[in-house]
Image (tube, rainbow, N blue to C red; front, side):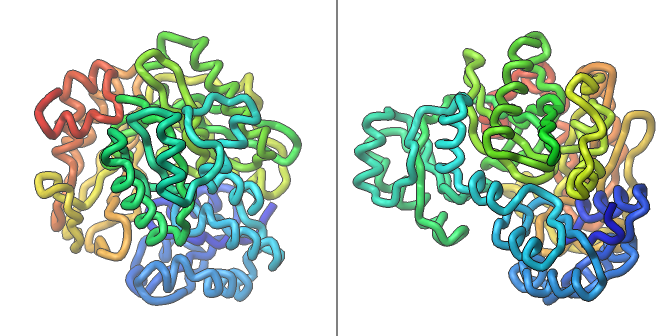
Length: 451
């Protein structure tokens, strides 16, 4: 087992990883930017190293500074968390080249699955259902238009290197295709430095259902059930739950999705925790969308219903140990829901609300978990994501979980910045959501008063 792990991240995920390490008796190193000098993760870790100024490109994306911090403190492994360098194959390779264990999959797998068009080809070859579309990346709008005509509209135009909704546009017809393609391609170049695009037939009003998997270096792959992440805005998730209300009455469908997720992981020789994301249409046909080669923000709901520690398991796998459980051990118990609490103003198009939290009260009680790095006096920086906390609740069933979430949202107090607490509460009160019928278009319909 490792003696010391450096956490190449910040915020609540850095705190989450530090806590897992402390429970395992592993020393930790926090890295921080000048803007995060008083961040909670710097106080909880055994050591803390400043790696640069506030902008992420100069600090949390500064591979040279992070590797120097790991070497200078004697860390024998790095956990990247999510975001930042977590899906950067170059960084993973640099760790390997410097005899530091990267807690995640190999750089080759990250590279293979990070390129979305290449990932599609891999899944096609493995027999995993994929949305009809291009098998290879496209660069030229005229070539793309020719291929679009064979696919049929509406068409989703996506960046091969994309993520977080960037480099993504929907073309409704041949008339708007060139404009949408060029806009998405420019976004891809600006965000990822890559002009490679691919096309998919747009699935109308889909559900976003993903399967959590974890694999070790001994040939074991386990699927830990599914999460429903359909409640999202601009392709950014807001609420996640496990199990999916769509699959609760169809155990056969759940088993098929889990089997395909395991098949996808085996097809690429995957190790560590990862997520296979599917889109599901109104007829309950599901299609591979992408694989996230890292821990997810929403891993907590899976931990709640499976009684597992995914972060701890990632560390054990990276140290060469076999998984501590088998597929037969995974039983979904009850229902868990997560709400992301952000410093933002929903009534002003969700405009970020940076500032200092002068007072905060967190909910608690039976079946309530809060993952956060915020505290009284903590500054929400304009340089990073505006998430303040994740509230996770578990009930015996979905109805009880929703009731617990309403109570938790009522109890939470944040003074000093605007939040989406009231907006999340309103969703918990919405009949479409309560009936388990929300799809990826729900938030837009909710804002328009249509549901």
